[in-house]
Image 1 (cartoon, rainbow, N blue to C red):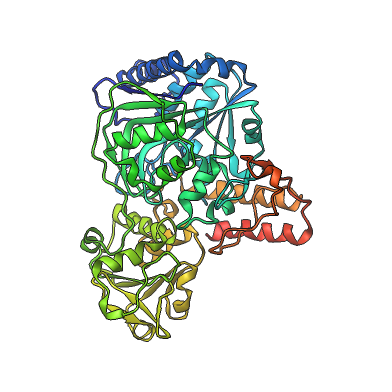
Image 2 (image 1 turned 90 degrees about the vertical axis):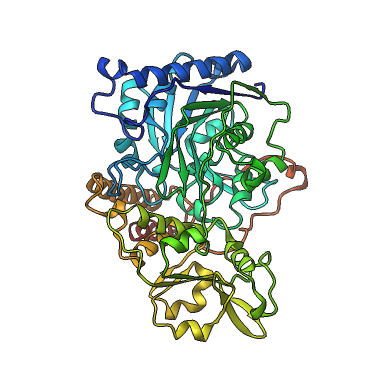
Length: 547
């Protein structure tokens, strides 16, 4: 298909009703007579009609055996125990309903697939947002991918994620029997700056593989995935955009647009500009562009308005964070190969200290910051609690380890251990101080552990795990059911994930034959699972409930 992006503005009106969860009367005549629903249907149909006229994508849909459509339901924040009832974290179900209605013209075998963020059971996301009712209304399939058996591929051109596991049903996409449509939300993201069409595929890989290299390698890892999975069409829900620190709650932006395209990277690039963000400042996009996944000759149809989205900000040292949490002292001291090199602890400037802090952008620090944002959006909070946060394993200078605060002031290991303020260590690299820490976030990276540690340290109940979350009991039952299902698959010798190993390394793969090094991917059958591996995987599943 020709590379083309279409931008369509929706009629001006208030779209802030039911943009996270469908109302009870969904599917009725009364629902479809609503002005906002008519406008959304009109905008979606107009947008996709234009894209089809330019590219003829409908012919590919008709000739495929099936159509796999993936929204972004990493978390659905509807009456979840936070200040407001709704936050624009997930793909608007009203938009998704209109998209499925449109696609049914060309393909009857449609399957909606998703895997929410660990440990959120996707069945709860489906129920909360109303996607289960969309599937029933339109007679489509509906699959929670985290309980699906997986297949494995080796990616010869990959720089980080050389081993990839994807759900069995996605094998049909790789082998050309199915079309793949990505339907993300227009929003910013703590880990990657923006989270749009091709990053949406992070939800296709299993939990343990998501956490592998979920650190400063994350942009390369996601670009690697494009060698295997590229959406045939990306349709971005921009009716209500989201600005702020995803995966924590984000604030709504009235963008009122639909963006679609046949090249995922170019569609995401257009969407990023519309958000008022320079795509060249987003490493995720520049990494994919560098690999050749863009289309320099892409055509754009429609007017591209420019908004001013508040960018995600992972820092615990900046003025914004310090103003909200004045008694949280963040101390950074990474000794990673790409971190700033420091030889004199008394010559560190505030600018250098913040570069040290962000040396592992994309991992534990970002996850911890999202945890602090949950505190901000909680109904009750105490921003005056004192806490010391240790980021990194310390900078080694003349045999001593040093960490630095936002002003560049150095702290030794002995000075930190002598502090009376509670200590929180971030990730495996800060484990040198774990014996002195009251709160620990082991892993590299375990996002859920980091989020929970931040809320625990600030004496706030994690919203999704509180009784104020109206889906709390469904969440709990679904989580137990999901873990039981995954454990049963492991017991039977079915692969549903890779073993959970938290190390800061690029995981080794077999030597690739010379004649295969230019291939995008190679099928790599999973081995027969021995008893030791089965027990290890079952143990990993039980840990999901413990986070």
